[in-house]
Length: 91
Image (cartoon, rainbow, N blue to C red; front, side, top):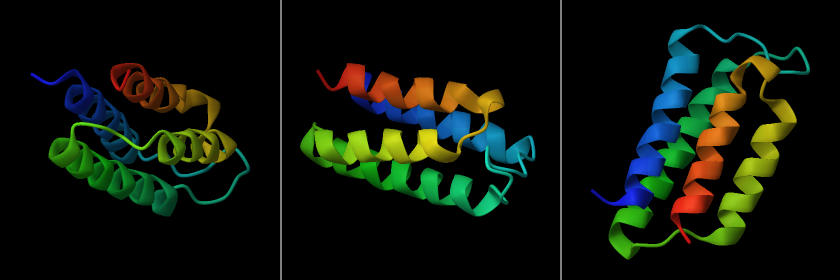
């Protein structure tokens, strides 16, 4: 298996778990459903690009991690850790 694609799969699975668990609020108290869905879509697109190119855009990943950290509730930091796994796998 490809470590980069595996890392994407783990991150997508973490987001799906949060969606199934019904995470309803962001750390700021706003509805989280649309943000989780958007994050999942972004990860799926990133995985598709990575499967085609074998790489991930470092700036895209930095922005994704930072923006996710702004809203993700403390109870779901595993998502951020999984995004970090993508960063580690790309090197």
